[in-house]
Length: 168
Image 1: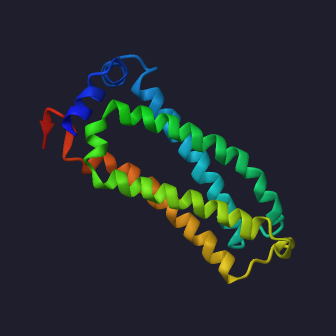
Image 2 (image 1 turned 45 degrees about the vertical axis):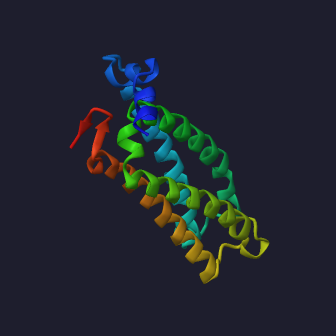
């Protein structure tokens, strides 16, 4: 695996992302990743909290309008996340927390689609009262996105290898 890590780390893009003093390199990518995460998790939180009973005057069906924002922010996060991975492939790919984060995101994406189909598009919930199962789905969704965010933050502190040549 070190050969693959070295190949990525020695690429012009990886070197530029890591070593450029330009604010258009690593800092901008990190800003995009943070903004995308804020919109993705924030809109999910708004949907989940609405299902749990916050803002009962807002029709649940209107929450579906957040999905284009969630889709856009997911792709912003995916693109910026790939760039962050290219900048430090050894740091991420040798860290089990990174894989936990990816698993949380994958489960959360599937879960969010199911939540949309079973709760937001359910005509029985038009008036806003969601039974316990829908609330469990909403709470689980909030938990999954929170776990993905926290594991992403832990990546900065839990790595054992920064690059191919540097071990802790």
